[in-house]
Image 1 (spheres, rainbow, N blue to C red):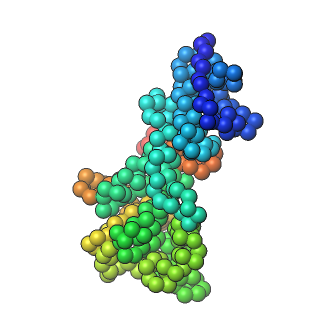
Image 2 (cartoon, helix red, strand yellow):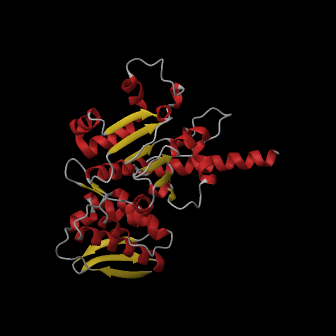
Image 3 (tube, helix red, strand yellow):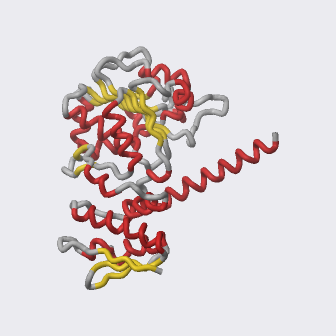
Length: 326
């Protein structure tokens, strides 16, 4: 057993660092099997050598965040813990320096994981970016934030949001209402991001002026999209033909972000996923980047990470049995 002392800066509220009923420190104690207590001369961590070192590194990161006026929450703590458990060497507190956009409330939108950070950097450097990974990793939300930022900076003249409406067979004809009414249920995640960035009224104004366009993927055929920021969501449900059609719509001055989760393909069994095929065909082409998220990039409730891991384990076991039967 060893002991490590960490000094707490005078400008830090200890209650904010420790959390309500010491909940923040309890997460760290449970993760590393250490004991953390507050003393007059600072924070004392006791336990096994490597565990104390890693727990101390997490506490230091949290202190740095608070010194930089960053709010700490369970997601940030659990992410810092996961980074340390994998060997560390990465300072999670530096993620707070990135501001992707400013929402309608004037609050900065920042990356919360290094997977998100690489994704945003890829969007800045490439014409087409594929964001591939499980739900809750911020693929769509960050794409919308970057699109609105580009529009406000006049880097593009319009935003186009599209998504394959698999459940309605792409024709959408049997649903009541006009085209907008038919498409809305399928594009709700994109709308949510837009409302947070522009507000409900602002979004509607842009939409009425044609600056923001929402359309099912089938309506992209035959068009050339210049000076636009285009987001294709739920791309795992495109066919190879649809994916090729979409990617060849991109004109001069445009950027495209394609998001999807290849573990949640809703296409009929005899249909191939256009996203999976694009990953094979387009890899290595300059100007096209592929960013893959994992369960560690999930920024929803911690249980979501466990659910994703459980399903991945189940799928691996099922595939192993299938191979053994052959």
